[in-house]
Length: 303
Image (cartoon, rainbow, N blue to C red; front, side, top):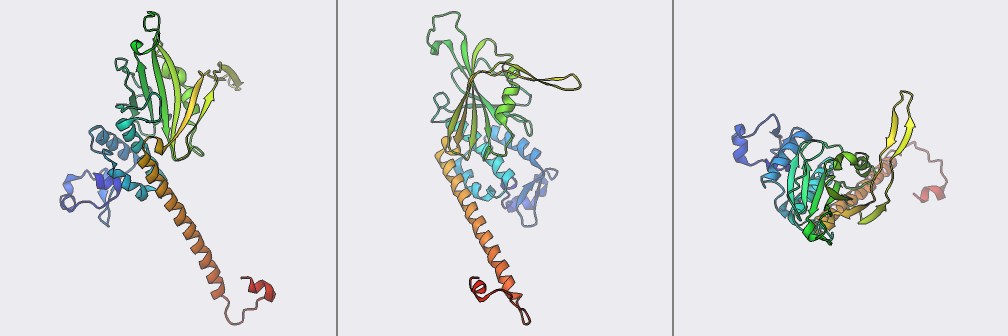
């Protein structure tokens, strides 16, 4: 299974016993490397293996980053699960509330059912739906009343911290997950009225860390279509939008990604230079007998 996900060489024992593989979803190529049928299969099986601690369970998988760096969908998928692995392992060390290891709970609905009995421990709700339209996951931390100031106030609500997050190599060109989440914010907090809810949106990217504070906004009526439908803009609470580089969840993950990215850029530069030299060389070879160069000697000498 690992060989199929990493497109590595399939062990000889498996190749000699093909009945061990479900060939509807996985197969072996002519060069004896494994592969999978489609992204739906990749995600479904990866989620199950991750849950059973059989996939992305140690830092050895970081060795695969250079292998995937030239394939945008492959490296994007890889980094999504690498971030999930490190969140589960050690949280976000630089974060005030999320600096501890996290529990991972899968969900296959539009909105996860929050387990309100888990207090003072961050929980990742991870969607198993293929191409979940809004997020890569949402982290929930419920702070029990005993851990807050004014704990003797019987009217005080417990505080629930929401951290929806998206993993992407770079935000430019990616769907605006932050905007999509807050368009449906009322649905996410509909069943959390018993809590004092605070929200912070997180991006995990290959970019430097930064943050933006968004002010509270009231709902607004938008344009009315000819059909009579009114496009309303939902209100949103005051919140912070934060960007964490991959190194914020793991220094080693950030370093391996940057090394692979730099190597890719160097290869692209070398390939471009080789192409230019080949074109120039081909032009020179085409100047055979009978070719008349109409340029001046000065122009020709500059070549």
